[in-house]
Length: 243
View 1 (cartoon, rainbow, N blue to C red):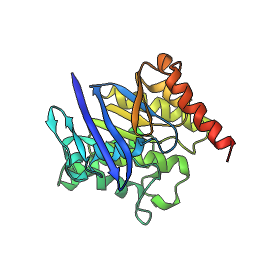
View 2: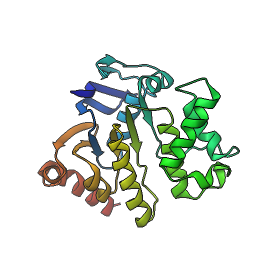
View 3: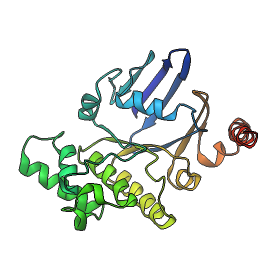
């Protein structure tokens, strides 16, 4: 049964159509990858699902309940958590306190929130950083902190927006394993990534967006052979070569 259903969503910014009539669904426990050239509309689609943008057309259902246009905090309370392309820690407070911010979405009890936050840090192998200021973390650990804040809300679905960009190869391998472990905990995952190694290693299915529209969806091995997908990426490369 589908956990998330996106039905014909469109988003315009003035005369620009960033996403046009986009429809797809994600089953419970699935990892769905979303790829496409720069400016394809991937993050705009993420922002509509997470409540940061309201679709101009279409609707979004989560757990068979319509969430179209709900504010981000209400979407989060329904069970959808997200990370951002650019990590956004609260730099002047500790790593543990950062994660507590997410934990308070699920409870107002400080003891329960702290236990949840500590459990998330242990899962992500970040206990040693709990008392350190978040602003002083290296890039790889800031990426983990983004995921920790999201997991502390106890989501049913996690949206990962380029969570592995800027990581060293060894850090990327560790993060791939962590995402598998997150799915093993029963959390459905939707991820945007430019690193094809990540997408091919993680995704059960891939959706490809180009100029705001879906041009392909299916298993990774099939999608990367799709002529429309090859043309979209080669077209972008050729366009850059002419700049």
